[in-house]
Length: 207
Image (cartoon, one colour):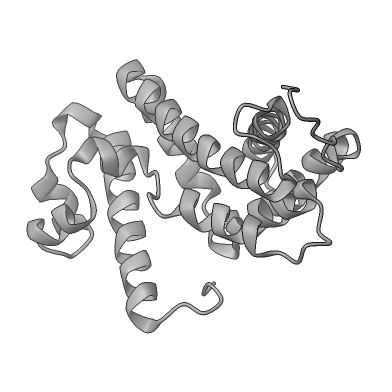
């Protein structure tokens, strides 16, 4: 599925990146991660080695598959909603916008990636670190939208709870493909959303 406002060049780049991720995960699952080379990944994706390095600094990055543009893109969406939109609803809509039809159809790839990462704790730690960086960007955006200082707990709590809800939804999705991931994430976010739907008022001198 194409992203709104996405150019032909952007679509091509996104598809090439996705093809390299798929090639990395599948080859790693088949042969063992340590036995796969960048040259083999590029050949599997039908691109040059140079093209591979245009997208990833290493095969580690290709396996983890973190999109460096996802965090900034989601933060921008959070800030772009009309002023009447609550911080929670802006966050919720931004998360759901990321879950495209392609992601819903990538269940098998997600499971393979998880399988490979579980065998490499060092890469699993890096994957979590990437998630933490994105969470901080989103928390900053939520805080700005709510008019709260960066030190306030509300933005960080909302995003941390949202990430936990997303992981719970993915766990359910992994064991049952009869429901789309977007529906599961929406349900999970709504379950905790009532309590965080409105940002608290900030008082000068408060935390």
